[in-house]
Image (cartoon, rainbow, N blue to C red; front, side, top):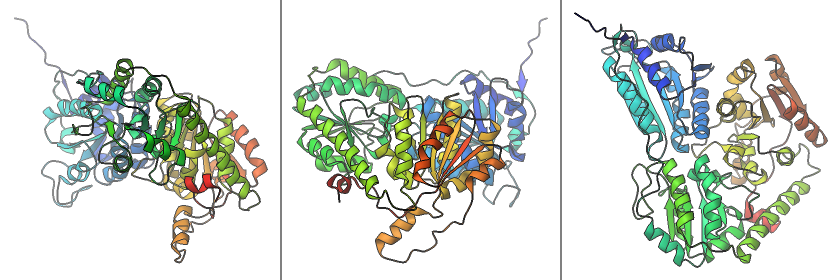
Length: 558
């Protein structure tokens, strides 16, 4: 009589089999006692590379950027307790950015004692901690749940508005013996089809006299960004962008208009918006500040954004970012194609010209200042940028200048920390970008405080010999806070961070370190750094005591 052998594996191996079935090729994480059962399986998974970080939050940020660039969830693996909570801020940043991430943590055993190792009294503390910053947070205490939970996580991460999912696997599950292997198949992904019922929107667009498109954070998504110029050309509509929508539309496109940020917008943008009878907020999420400001100053606003709970009054229901891209293409094909007006082209040309002139005048205004203006270093990078470069920027003074100075060719030209506003973003973001786009030159822009927050993983990019240029604005201050305190008229307090020679710091890890003391050294330093094969740290000894780049002030020459 024939017998059937039931295949059995330990739960950690089942979890890794789900990762492999869903095309995961890299995992960012840090091993620990409560997750050894998962790492036992990762060690023998030939298709998956593991990037060992030195701080768990850096793993979360690297996975966020990997997910944003590839459209596939970045994966984070951390141990229980502090291993998981160390990464909580990065996962919140991924939620704010709308980035697909699978966050897998260990957990205390089911029925653990009070004050167990890596635990507190409540064994569900991690599940609860991550619930507010993820699309789904679950604690697995039954080996039979592992495959289904992880497969569901891959579906949820890219459905609706993308975002992170937290899956905690209790230690007793990972440490348990072999169990029957369930059927494992790739997650079912939402179809890349246009939103239903576009005929009414097409009719509204055809009736409109003048249309403006405002590209928000969701338009940065690579597939959406690729479809955006075609829609703009079909509608004859200039494209403005929110702060975090920078790079959604190439700056060299004749319909690129400029920054929209309420009363801090480019004046040409507000003028054109107010003269339009319909504004399309592509990638603008209803309920956000950008949506509220736009609704307050335009005649009619329609938001096109993937959402888990769409508002029919704001725009059509779009089930995924792939569907949003398909919706833009369908609209471009379905609307009455209209020629681009001379007025629209002239408005875009004026906006871009006046921005360039204003930035140039601002840098000349402070040409003799010492320490010198960090905008000089960013401008020198802008002049050397190519479509193959990937720029990531941190939360610091560089974040204020980069979206105004950098030319962009598409979303990969500039990746920013999102509205979560987490310092220490650029270094791990650059690591994530380097793994998402192997061989591409990645340039990370950060202030010295931000760099120090993440600097434990400078060794990681050196270990992997990643082609990353880490550019650090060295001013010895938390410069943005110094500026805020100065403008408020109060005392400047608790902003000094101490002195470090960052170039020599880089050399201690075997990387190239370049210190730039004077403006005439900036260009040659960028040339040397960009030509290098491996990691480089550029240290710019620039100042912090300069006005912030508020566009109406710059354009007016004040």
